[in-house]
Length: 200
Image (cartoon, rainbow, N blue to C red; front, side):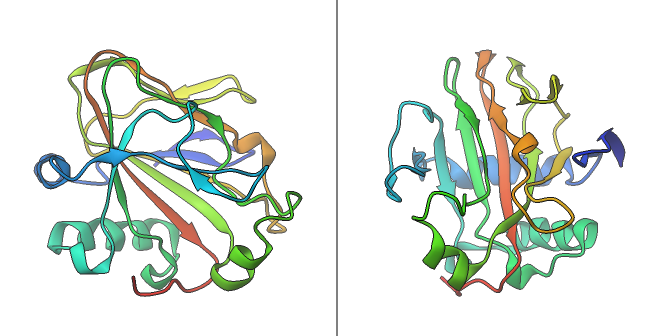
């Protein structure tokens, strides 16, 4: 691991996933991609929004294969968070100009719309973003509050905390998936929570 930031904690895990596994995930995602959604803190809705234009393929439990299971096992090994607390992994595709503008991955308890979500399924405490491709320009994971941009090679994972040591939302975790200026960016995103997830 390479420490990118001590506070809040951001690390780059080199070689998190073998390049052949990264290629496999891209192939499995093709043909299954759909417009990415956001969790709207103002309304509590899950919906399309201009701030997120990349496309997503989710892998719920019935869609998992050995490679997807390996990704989750690696995430458990690196973070100590059991797979039972992982949301389904998502492969995300960014064509030139597509992005996910600055946002938080945690569910904001101050909005009042996510009380049931947090009560039933817990808070998103960690995010793992694994780069799956190299043939694109720009497209970093940016942390505007920290003045940081991180970009891994295929198989490298950017791991960061969404909550602080007390379990409170870490607002310096604000981040963005910057758009590639050329080529196609692929990443695998995994959100880890603090409560077991439903088997769907």
